[in-house]
Structure formats: structure tokens, C-alpha cells
Length: 401
Ligand SMILES: Cc1cc2nc3c(=O)[nH]c(=O)nc-3n(C[C@H](O)[C@H](O)[C@H](O)COP(=O)(O)OP(=O)(O)OC[C@H]3O[C@@H](n4cnc5c(N)ncnc54)[C@H](O)[C@@H]3O)c2cc1C
Ligand code: HEM
Image 1 (cartoon, rainbow, N blue to C red):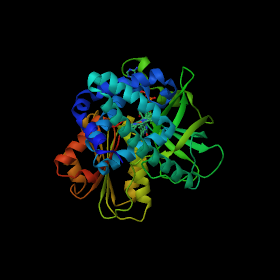
Image 2 (cartoon, protein in one colour):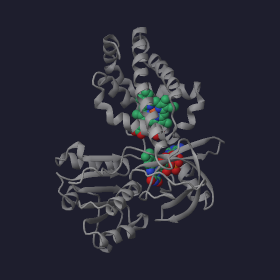
Image 3 (cartoon, protein in one colour):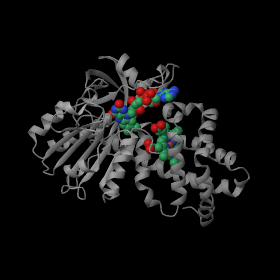
Image 4 (cartoon, rainbow, N blue to C red):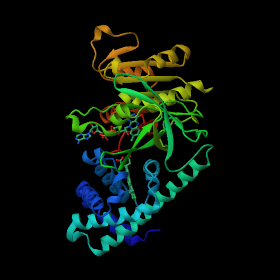
């Protein structure tokens, strides 16, 4: 337990953390990559460059300080962070590295305000949080290992098939080299690929599983990130997968993780799956799993994307709608001429009218995945329409800032 004195000293730093949080975490990453370059391969350089890691960590530190006396509030955040850490193979032994660089950054950024008392209090508070995270992470690893076919660390898979789903999205079917069964994952979860970099190091990326669980293969569906600011900004992993990795290649895969999954306990409410672009991947796994179950609840599937050329899984979802009366679907295209729209299709952005026509908005459970702008627009629409936060679950394809 933390002492009263530690708690009150940490609480006194809240205004400074709110003011300088991102400066502090930016300094933290600078220090850590200078003093402990061995942890660099854990971190996605594009998220670093865009400042998303810095913002997510700053928000987590402020939230911790504000709720230090009421840590139950942070249960969902602890689960999200722990699942992410496990997916990227973060271990208990890495925590002292982060801890010492964080204290160093507090000292650098807060200057004279970082008294010995403040540094001691933050040292204790950090160790307390680190233990909560590391303990949960060890439990997740151990639960993964107990599953039939479960494993820890990276395991070799063969790319058994590549299939173009649209002009920008390709699916990869991954089969374990050892021929063992694959574990049941929760539809919505993601796996991790560890891939080589041009500099001779490695980098990791998460990809949602885009098919329902089965024993012999995983499927991921990857959008090629072309890089709008010139060829040097092309996405590393997605271009490697699209252009260089071919059928028969071996690839390193970490076990399924993640806290965004279909709630199969709650059988009463209808569900609405709101997909933006390639954010369809976890939602399509949920949709297939849901429809294959005995449940009877209505399902609405709304896919927002640029146009039919870039859209994945449309014909499969149309077929599911024909064979399942409880499913209704709608495609909303933001880059299309309205005169060529087919039934179940409209142009523009997803708005409150479309959502209200698709479900009983106050009773439904919403699952959202897509680009950050799409997700915040959907959350705004729902919350301002009276939907409660616990009716909404979402997955971000990057740190939650
Ligand atoms: C839980 C989770 C699930 C995911 N599931 C999927 C999925 O199912 N399908 C999928 O396609 N993706 C998914 N992603 C995203 C995926 O992990 C990768 O982030 C994505 O493939 C891009 O990786 P990349 O290496 O190609 O791009 P990166 O090299 O990481 O670049 C990312 C972005 O930054 C831009 N960029 C890169 N370098 C620069 C630079 N120097 N200057 C300016 N801009 C730059 C790129 O153009 C690109 O848009 C998921 C992510 C998470 C966290
Ligand atoms: C108490 C200590 C820590 C806290 C509070 C913390 C917090 C966070 C948060 C908030 C995220 C973003 C989660 C998301 O939205 O996806 C994150 C991601 C991450 N963390 Fe930690 N973390 C801690 C320790 C560590 C350690 C010890 C490591 C290992 C070196 C680590 C490596 C990572 C990595 C690699 C990511 C993903 C970054 C990305 O997606 O770009 N973290 N962490």
C-alpha cells in the first residue's frame, strides 16, 4: 500500500503534470532511447513521430495521479495497457528501465519543483503501478498458455495464402509451422507480427484477426499505407506485407491479445457494428462469430469507406445478410457519385439518422473500429444522442490518446 504522505505528494504534482504532461513524456522517450536503446524495437516509430505514444502515456500518468486513491476506476485502462504490453512482449524486467527514465524526465522537466520528496513519492507510486501492470500481464501470459494450442513469445507461421480483398486491402492466411492447433481467440482480438527493418533490427505491429476462430489458420487483412507525404512516408510493415512477403514465407507471430471483443454473455440487446475503412477487420470476425451462434439478437452492420473499390468483404457481408434475417447492413461511401448507388448504400458520412434507422439507439450495444476521426465522430454522435458510455466499445489502431 502507498503511504498517505506518498499519495498526497503525488496529488500535489497533478497541476504540473496536467500542464507539462506531454513535455514530460517526450523527454522520457528521448532519455530512454538514449540510455536504453535496447527497448527501441518495442515502440512503433510512426506513433512516436506523430506524438501518439507521448500523449497516451501522459494521459495515463495524469489519470493515475488523479485516481490514486480510487484505482478501480482505472480497471479498463489497466486491462487495455496490459493486453497491449503482453502483445508486444513487455516483461516485468523492463519496468525499472521505464521507471528510472520517467523519474529522470520528471527531474529534467519540473526542475526545482522536483524535490527529493516528490521524486521519492513518484518512485514509490511508479513501482506500485508497475507491479499492478506486470502482475496482470503475467496472468494474461499464463492464461494464454493454458489454452489448447496457446503459446507465449513469437512463433513461426507460414503465409499459406494471400488474397486481395480490395484495391488497398489484402488478406494473409497464417498457418503455424509446427502444425499444432490454434487457440480459440475472442472475436475482435489482434495478433502481433515481428518484422525486419531496413536497419537490420525488428519492429512489431498489431493486426486484428479478420475471421472467426478456427483450428488451423489465422487471417489478418492489411491496408497498404501509401504515405501521402512522399515515398519516405510509406508504411513500413504494410508495404513489406503487400509487396515483399509472399505465399510460403515464414513470419513471426505473437498470440492473440486485446480487450475489444464481442460480449457473448449479454443476449438481450441488439448489437451495432460500426466500421470505418480497414477498421472492418475485428468487426467482421465478430459478425461471423455472432451469426454462427444460436443467439437471436438483431445485428446492424454499418461500413463507412471511401468507395466500393477500397471496400473489403462486401460480397461476403451481402451474402450473410441474405442468409440471416437478423442482420441488416448499410454501406456509406464518402467518395462516390450518388447516381451510381445501389440499395443499402448511400453517400456521405455516417450520421445520427442512419444509426437511428438501423437500431433502437438507447438499447443497442455499439462496437466501433476505424480511423481516429471516424471513432470520435461516432462516439460524439452516440453520446449526444443519450447512449451511455457502457453501451460503447471501441478499438483504436494505435495508442488511445
Ligand atoms: C490493435 C490494432 C489492430 C490493428 N489491426 C489492423 C488491421 O486489421 N489491418 C490493418 O491494416 N492495420 C491494423 N492495425 C494498424 C497496424 O498495426 C499498422 O499500424 C499499420 O499497418 C501501419 O503500419 P506500417 O508499418 O505500414 O506503417 P508505419 O510505418 O507504422 O506508418 C504509419 C503511418 O504513418 C505514416 N508515416 C510513416 N512514416 C512517416 C514519416 N516519416 N512522416 C510522415 N508520416 C509517416 C505512414 O504513411 C502511415 O500512414 C492495427 C493496429 C492496432 C494497434
Ligand atoms: C507503469 C508503467 C507503464 C505505463 C503507465 C504504461 C502506459 C502505456 C500506455 C497508456 C500505452 C498506450 C496503450 C494504448 O492505448 O494502446 C502503452 C503502450 C505501450 N507501452 Fe507502456 N506503460 C508502462 C510501462 C511500459 C514498459 C515497461 C514498456 C517496455 C519497454 C512499455 C512499452 C509499451 C509499448 C511498446 C507500447 C505500445 C506503443 C505503441 O503502440 O506505439 N510500457 N503503455
